[in-house]
Length: 168
Image (cartoon, rainbow, N blue to C red; front, side, top):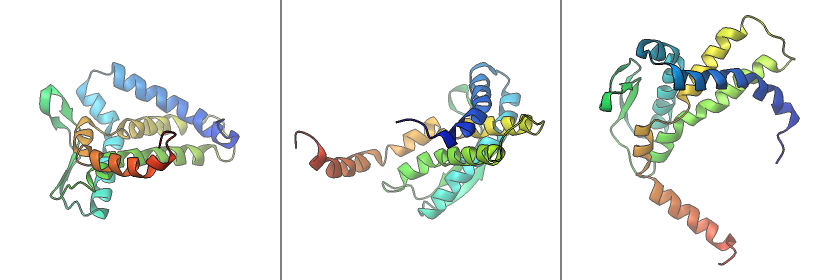
C-alpha cells in the first residue's frame, strides 16, 4: 500500500528526529545526558500510562519522572504505580506510550502544513521530537505487565478471526 502523498512531508520532517533517536539510543553513554535528552519522552510516556490507567480504573497510586537506579544496573527514567492492574487493563496500560506517536506526527504536521523551510526553531523541535520518540516505545517492564492480558486478547482475536481463516 503506497504512502499517501500528503503524509510525505510529515515523514520527511520526522526523519531527523528518528535519526537523532537512533543515535541517542545507540551511542550515548552518559547517563546524565541521556536522562536529560529523554526527559520530554519520559514525561509523556509516564503521563500516558497515568491517563490510560485512570480511564481504565487501574487506580494509579504514584508517579515519578526522576531518574533513579533500576534493576540489572540500568537506569529507571520514570514510573507509574497502580493498585489495580487486571486482565482487561494490563495490555492498554502497557502500550499506552504508543499514543505518543500520533502526537509526534501532529507536531510534525503542524510544522510542515504550510510548506517547510528550515528555521532555527526546527533544531529544538527535532530534539524534543527525538525525546518524544524515545519515550514512545513501551519499556521491558511494560511488556511484562502486558502479559496479563495477552492470552485473553489472543483468544478474542482468534474467536473473531476463525470464520475468516481459509481452513475454517
